[in-house]
Length: 92
Image (cartoon, rainbow, N blue to C red):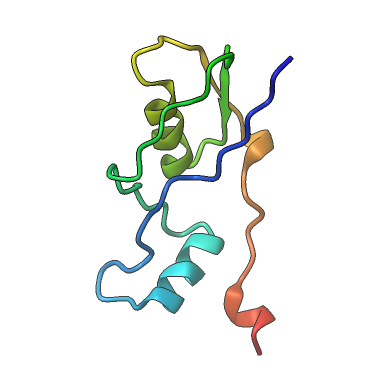
């Protein structure tokens, strides 16, 4: 079995007038789920037979990009979900 791990494609945390720091706070506390930047596209390596992803929007979009034209099965699971935490609480 070949396992390939890919970090989620690039995304911008800034939104609705929030700066980067406050945007990350909303992402890590699961109040905001940003889309990815499509320009950060790379196809999956040969030998990949399925793609597993968390349910987060940016993770699902990354899985779709990595699948490309290959029609691979995509399995979305909460088992890969990020842990919810507050950046503000750990930086004080």
